[in-house]
Image 1: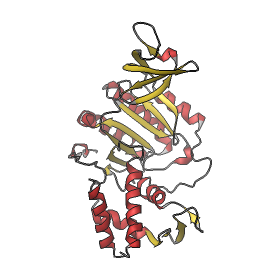
Image 2 (image 1 turned 90 degrees about the vertical axis):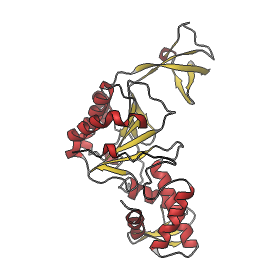
Image 3 (image 1 turned 45 degrees about the horizontal axis):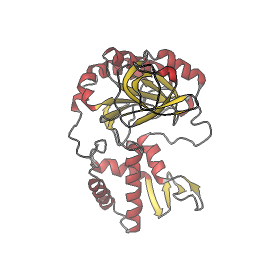
Image 4 (image 1 turned 60 degrees about the vertical axis):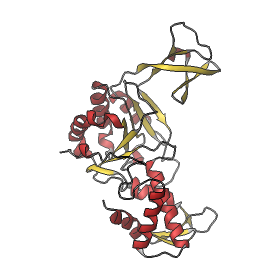
Length: 318
C-alpha cells in the first residue's frame, strides 16, 4: 500500500475535533479520560481498527482464557521441550530459582535447572528445561515454544495470521510440526479466547530474521493447509504476504510494532490539529516527517530503522 493510501484510509475514518476529542463512524470519542463523552484513546482506536482490524468491545471476558481451547492447543502442539544451555542462577526465593540468560530473567523450579556439579547456588551456570508452551501468556494468548533454542537477542520478524477460530488448532499443529522438524527456533502465540476472534493478529509467529530464507518453503506449505480458513484482511501497517498473512519486524521495546505505529500516527494527527493543518496531503507530509525523524518509513512502516530487507523472498504464496 502506498503512503498516500495508508494515511488516507485513517484520515477518511477519523476526524480530530479538538485536542482531546475525535469522531469515528459518526460517534465522538474522548481522547482524555477526564473529558466528557465516550472514552477511547485515539492510539487504541487506530490500533484496533487498522492493525488488529477489529474494534474489540472492552469487557471483563476479553482476555479470559478458555480452558477447553487451551487443552486443544496443547494437544496440537507437537513440541517436546528442550534443555537450553547458558543459564545462570541469580537469586532464590521460596524454593524457586531466579535464572538469567542474555538479559532474560525468569523463575524456574529446581527440577528445571541442571548443572554438572548438581548444585543450585547463586552464580551457578547450567541448563534450563524449556517447556513446549506457556498456556497463560499475558494479553490473552497461548504461546508455543520451539524445541530449538530461541535467542531473544537476535532481531526477529513477526508473521501475522488472521486465522479463524475453527482452524486455530490446525495452524498451531502445522507450525510446530514443520518448524520443529527443521529445527527452526521460533515463538508462536495464538488467542486463547474464542470471543477474541477475528483479528488480523489472531496468531503471531516470531522467527529470527536470518532464518527467513530457511522457512519460506515451510510457510508456503503451512499457508496451503490453512488458506481456506484465513480471513483476508491484514494489518494496514504490515507487509501483506497473502490474504490473511502480514509481516513486520519486531520492535525491541515493550510497546510492540502495531501499537508504536498507531501511537506515532495518533500523536501526529493531534499535533496537526493544534497547528491548524487540515488538508490531507499536508497532514500526510507532517506524519511522514515524524516517521523519518525516528528513522522509520511511512511507506514501509513494517521495517525498523536502517533495515534493508524488503522480504520479497516471501511473496511466493500460492
